[in-house]
Amino acid sequence: MNGHDTLAARVAAASSGTAYAVVAPAPAPGEGNWAGAPSAALDDDGSFVVAYRVRTAKLRGAATLVGRSPDGINLTPVVTLDKERFGAESLERPALVRTEKGRWRLYVSCATPGSKHWRIDALEADDPAGLDVAEPRTVFAGDAHEGIKDPVIRRTTRGWHAWVCCHPLQVRGEEDRMWTRYARSDDGLRWQWHGVALRGRQGAWDARGARVTAVLPDGSATYDGRASKAENFSERTGTAFPGATPGSLEARADEPVSAARYLDAVPLPAAMPGSTSGFRLYYEAPLPDGSHELRTRMLMLEEAGGAPGGRPVAPSA
Image 1: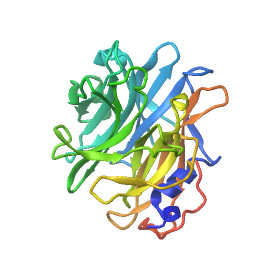
Image 2: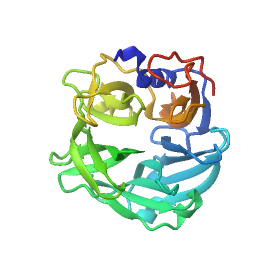
Image 3: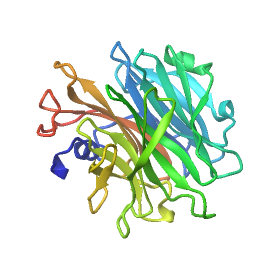
Image 4: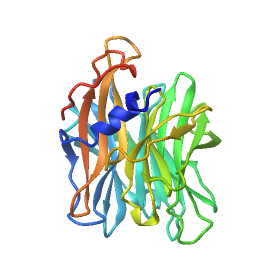
């Protein structure tokens, strides 16, 4: 697989372009005010449902918002889930997935008050509005040694797959270090770990950590990486190849592709069942004043199947 010809490479490159639309502006100017960390899914009517985190400098990850959009750009708010709903000090990237029965499941990253620990809870409802009253259930608890957050979850004909960001907690002041572990499940609720999927590389631009953000249909992936502790909250997007074992990934690039982080790519159905005509991208983008906004853009593939041999056409918002 040629690194420049993977779906991840095309998606990551598109997130660095200028043809985008702002889905959610930064909640305020200045550092620490972010809208982003998105996860999106298509509804049966072709509309987009987008879940994302809003953070302010004063309140940290204040809420997870869910909105609906017929065009993927203009969101109508559906649900606001405040961090108090989960007894959390902060919320980070959610994951929004349709179940095999067509229900909506939202995985929420929750910070344990007074600690560096994180866990992941799941909510489920018949429609996105129902998530407002759904009962949370912890599905990735973490422990005293590891915080668990920012999941990427895919449901396939072979079951449920998760790439989850993990932070080691043993060394005080070094909890920003991160890697991604891979897990599998029959129902998306009870999970089994299957090793580390992706780590940062010593001496490379991603040495401090690697957090998988999207896994594409060809098995390639995008991920957030950074070189140092000082770059925490300023991760950049890189790409990875499928690894030697199921769920594992291999990074080879000498530099990142984009300044975006938390990139998500929603496959757009093509005329041929099971194939992809392109992607709608959602990602968090930094602004010069230190705030972050949520952006989107389209990436259409010339070949209806969306195979790695196809070339991307000029994307638009």
